[in-house]
Length: 245
Image 1 (tube, rainbow, N blue to C red):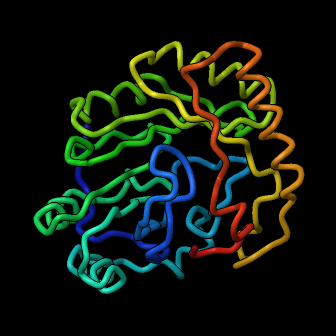
Image 2: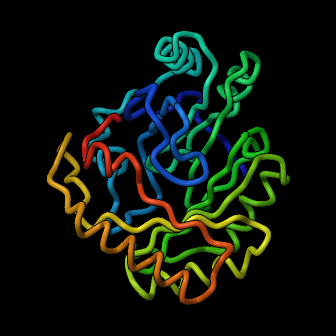
């Protein structure tokens, strides 16, 4: 399941403290470790600078000790939540970092599409599985997704988070939630104006995103899907498409 892993972590950026902008930990003060590299190419990806190989020269190969020093510097040595993101952070070797942080009172959350399983998933505090709907242009490998759940061994708080742009995505979300009825489900309206890969800030259609948010709320209410939680991307509402916040 895990295979041979590199000894260094490919890092696109480390930033914070800021707030978690979405999902189960929305609003929680967090330091982000964003890794470089991904096995997906979603059509509406909002972090292409951490995905596309042409930015590889901007990613830094860091040891666990180097990453940890930066996390503690940013947090002032005061324990908080550390979000492992990407790209797909599951392709990086985070087991040692998680163990180091837990020893000092830090907590760790990871968000992944569920395409790569790692043994250290069981050491996380929060595992956010975010399968990609039809609008992404990707297809979900449910066997790989199930392997991620098995790897977690039921230890971290585990949730589904699904981005919704349209009716096809909504139907996909309903199907995914039915497949995993034991997992809390969070729905998020999609950002149809993601930043270009080389932009640190870019115009954003907040009105359009909020219109989709209202549509999604109405859709859930009409279907009496009372188990689902509909949340915005809070960081998008505050900072738009700005990077590193």
